[in-house]
Length: 290
Image 1 (cartoon, rainbow, N blue to C red):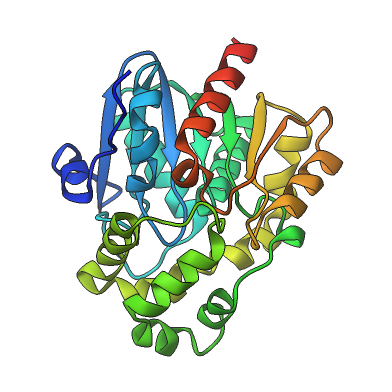
Image 2 (tube, rainbow, N blue to C red):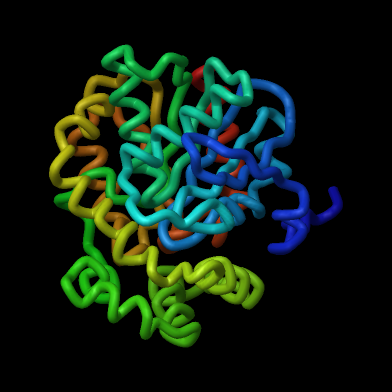
């Protein structure tokens, strides 16, 4: 089979769409056929993170990947919460006529997915979640090990730190969460930084990072549905991730009855570092629950 070449940044956005949800401009891509799959990216990157997996995912699913508010090329408003991110994704699905979907989530996207699962369990979602695949993220706040830059952004110094951020520091911080044998490529680093600073995006960093505090506040709401297995779910974990690596996978197995955990020798971005392996694990998981 011919080697798959993931779309470059501008190609990714040319093939997407913009819409207005809850008075906010939202970028999304939709492609493929089958059961809808909602892909939710993390902080501080964008839906473009899923480009290396795109062919694999769209071969079997109707895939929807949106830029979260404050990131990528979606609107960068003044106030953002996990609840608002969830509201916007629900609104997007409604506008596209989607009544049921699977989830693939990473990092901040894990937390947004957990809020969607909580709404599904309480009967307020208005649609059906079929399953959820988590990638590295702060699913359990007690295992999250934030980097220094995250702690600074969360502090009163956050706005000042954000405005002084440079591409050099961004590259260094990103490389530090990737596996040493699977470093981020030049295209990923350059494109992710470009998206981050567009439309005065630096100012969003201290506003977005408050999701770390929200995880603590809403821990029981967001962890409970996982422990009760309201839908089939699994974790694909890059064990070399210093933020939410092997120690987070251990906690997942400790707290979740009959947990399904797949460990890979990569860092915080398994879907960027080893997309082929992640794609096969996702496919296998969906086959087992079908």
